[in-house]
Length: 146
Image (tube, rainbow, N blue to C red; front, side):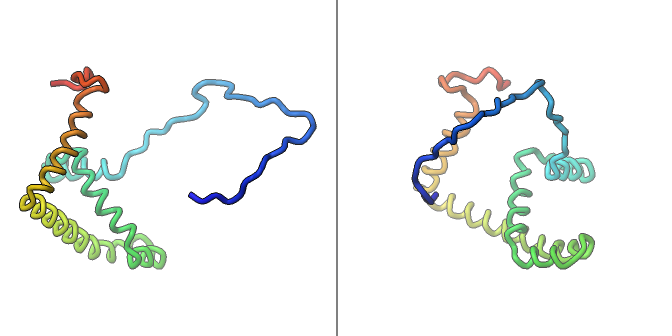
């Protein structure tokens, strides 16, 4: 953040119009929209008999984020219709899968060979998981079924 200016704001003399709040509760319309990656997990499970869960969505999120950050894919999307972009994307996606596999393998190797890293990761993740299993008082959360 950067400070751009400093000073006082003076309110001019005049007649102020009253502010109106919402007139009814629920005036906005909530639309249930499918989450594309959630739908992808459902499609994979249905078509291929897989048992992917919401946790597996993270993998696809990582692939999508890596693809969005790829300048070559960005240029291809801007220069082509969706069907032509799919041809470029399919080839890039294979590379993204391989890169993600390599990153995960490297992380796995580092974790398994470094006791200090195991300690840091175990403590941090253990705290996160414990917080999700318990409420703020340290008691088992009532909303989590055993």
